[in-house]
Image (cartoon, rainbow, N blue to C red):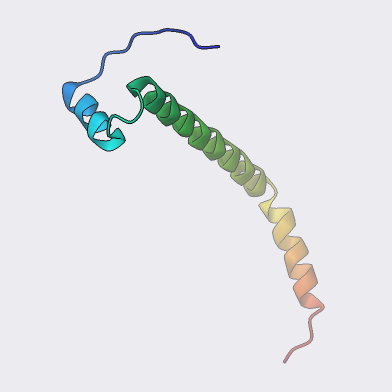
Length: 76
């Protein structure tokens, strides 16, 4: 379902959209795709940051496990 809304954009941005999009589709489609892409990138960034926080919280334990595993390796 589509919801009609109104936004105000600077003239140079509208001109850039028209130049980039080539008038093949309407501006609404372009803006909708741009917003969706942006939101997807932000969601991925948040997931990555959450994962990074988990790794940081568990870094000590993970490093000890890695050191333990490495201690079993034979020297070359």
